[in-house]
Every structure is written in structure tokens, then in C-alpha cells.
Image (tube, rainbow, N blue to C red):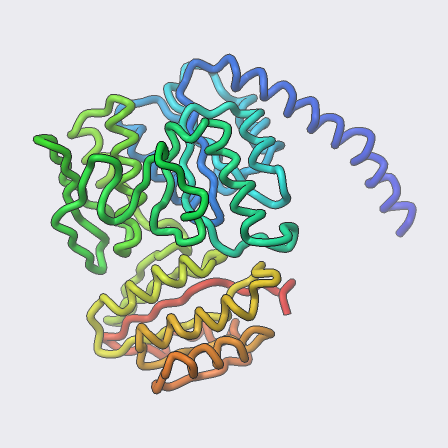
Length: 375
């Protein structure tokens, strides 16, 4: 084992890490010289969705390159930079946050012109001493841009202490001088109008849930700022769809199953239960194992989560048995939940046979995943 491991470690120290550092240094020069508009996306949640929305809509009128999948750290930024041709009109770069100082380092390397902060929530707290510390790291993007050309999700409660007057706030009411009107939410997505003076955008998206209106409005306004026409913006928004395991709807045997099992956070839970409460159904079922990576906030977050589920009043709640189940049950009790609670000991078997547990007219919301490395 030593003979196998030692060469791997030495190779990483002497070859891989120096090569990564060199690529990162080279990428800083590439980003600095690139003539395109550089948009950075940071936040505790919703980063990949925002990046993909920007890529989809802006591509209607611009040559756009976006960082792939959820590759959002310095080494992946460097690989992204190495593949640029210099002909791109817009670059959209997702920033991850794993340790204090990450976002500030990313800004110095990628040198963005526009920033989007999608929200603050307890996530990735294993390496941050507090939620405020994570928020300060994320808002270093705004500091870099001197709080101008920064779009911030105003529906994020934890972001409120860091918001400045010069920043552009977006929510389901609009962004800047643009106002949202005529909202419609159904199983196929959301529709609304975005109005400023005599200018009006009629927007329809395949994204599911009222919480998507704010991000879509922000993307539309950024697109308008970058010179896209009304027709291009409307066509781009019409192409947006739910991403895999992020409020992804499926119609099974007359029931709607909403798959929101990508790593979650309390803000995502709020959005999900609000959607569940709003949609019509003969029976509503809520399924979750709870949230991971909550650090010192674990108990508080899951008590709040239990109360939020109770407020949505589903007919049945299924919890995957693990270390946070007791907190969720306590939160449900605090919220006065009177429906059926099921504790599932075999999550894989349950999910594999889900279609046998549902009936026509049901709406089933599944939130978050719980991988094997968590207890």
C-alpha cells in the first residue's frame, strides 16, 4: 500500500500541483486580455441554474461561453480559459465556495465586469466558522466590483446585511426599474410580464415555481443591458427548462413528481414547499432525507425545515432515516403537523419503487439527496 500511495502523493506534490498553479497564473492573463464581458455568478445556492439561464438567454444574440457543469474552482476556471478563442462576446463563470478567501481569489483571477449573487444559506459550512463568514466571502465579489454592476437576490434573508444601495436587487417583484406583472404558475412552468415604461417583455419559461421569477427577471434585464432585442430575450427565456434534479417535473401514472434532489439548502426548501402548497392536487406527498453540509446550523436548520413542511400541510411526509430525522420530526411537531409521517429505513428501495406508492392526482415533491458519506 505504501509503495502505491507514496508515488501518487509525490507525483501530486511535484507535478500536479505545480502544473495547476501554472495554469491558474496563465488563466489570469487570458481573462485580463479577453475582450468579452465577463459575468461572475456566486452564492450558496442557485449558481449553476443562474449560469445556465444566462448562457441560454444571452446566446440568442451573443457568442457566449459558460463554465461547464458545476466546475467552479480555480483549476477548472483555468481549463475553461485555455479553451477560449477570444471571439466570445460574453463569458459566464461560476464561482464555488469551499474555504474562506476562495471567491476573492477567483475574482482576482477572472476579473469580472458583472456579478450575480444568487443568495446566502447554510451550505459548505464545514470549512467556515459561521454563515456570516461564508456570506462575507461570497460578497467579496461585490467588493471587487465596488458594489456596482452587481445583481443580488433580494429574497435571500441572509444576504440582507450585505446589500448596498448601489447594487441591483432582484426578486419576484422585478429588478431595478423593471416591474413584474401578470404572474402565472402551473405544472409546465412560469409566465409573467416584465415592464419598464413603455417597454414590455412577455416571458414564459419551463422552469417550475414562483421562486424562478426573480432569477429570470435578472437574466432578462442583464440581456437587455447587453443589447439583446425584445424578441431575442423572449425567445431565450422560452428555451429555459428545469435542470436535472432541480425542480424537474415528471408525469407518472397521472401524478406529478417534482424531483428537487440535487444538494439542497433551506432557501430551496422554502421555495419547494411554497410550490407544493400552491399547486392543486388530490393528495400531496413530501419526501426528504434532510440537508447535508449544515455544520453548526444543523439542528436549527432542520427544526425550521420541519416547520416549513408543516406549514405547507402535505397529506403525507416521508423522511429517510438518518442523523437529522429527529430534528425534522420535532420541527413538524412544532409546526402543528397532523398528517401522516413515514420513516423509511431503505431509501434506495423506496425511490426505486416510488411509482407503486403514488396514484393519479398526486403531487409528489422530493427534496435533497443524502449520499453514503453522511450518517
